[in-house]
Amino acid sequence: MSELSRVGLGTNNFGRRLDLDRSRAVIDAALAAGVTHIDTAFTYGGGDSERFIGVSLAGRRERAVVATKFGWGEERGGAPERVRSSLDTSLERLAMDSVDILYYHRPDGVTPIPETVGAMKELVDAGKVRWLGVSNFSAEQLREAVATAPIAVLQNQYSLLERGAEVDLLPLCVELGVGFVPYFPLASGLLTGKYRRWEPAPAGSRLDGQSIDDESFDRIEALEAFAAERGRTLHDLAISALASQPGVVSVIAGATTPDQVRENAAAADWVLTPDELASLP
Image (tube, rainbow, N blue to C red; front, side, top):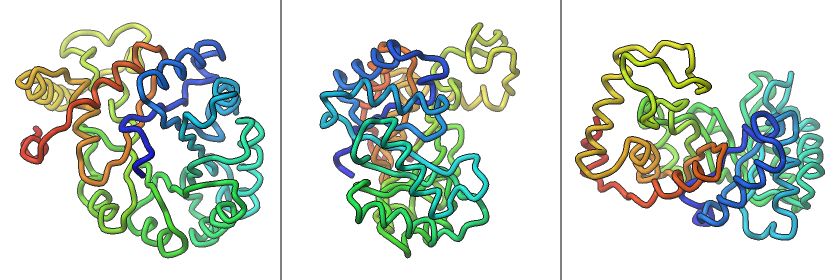
């Protein structure tokens, strides 16, 4: 998946916290900063995320690698007929003939994975999708999917505070030749550096009004010190450490302003050495 930019733009705020004009400003900044991987989903913003992306990329579709997802929050969302109908709706919203990546957003727990992935493969054969992806999958589920059709990418939660993926999923992705795409790399903002021990969360932030345990702060402060010793910020480390892991092909980071996009893109300039990765707190 060399066509994916090292940092991708998550757009779950489009149509929710951001209107069309602000969404377009974020996409403009992303493309200018070299962030060409744009990630959305059928459910984001009630469909407005896809619509806003379509409007924003009109006349320059070729500059972006667009990924969308289906199957979240629906009963039997992985049923073959849902796969086809969801993509048709997404393509209409995006005003596109095809998407670059189609993800199964989350297993519905009912439909056999080979049935869902088989239907997805038919959409590749029909020219509506370039690559297939799965999301929120276990190692066992990923093996099932790969046994059914070529899977290019797995998108799962992964951050320096949630490192379970390093145990089995990342090694499996390397073994199977599947690119790993982390989401929530900033751990809902905990790894941005704006939260401090014994201080209230910034007003309007995701964690405003919530308490953060001391153990989390211990880890955050250790990571911040690790970054500072190398002349970098905690935010830089949160993104670049994931992007430097073998098997990771792009890190999805959300943004609500052009400045945030630029900051995310700049963070990925740091490539950690194997020794640095091994010594992370």
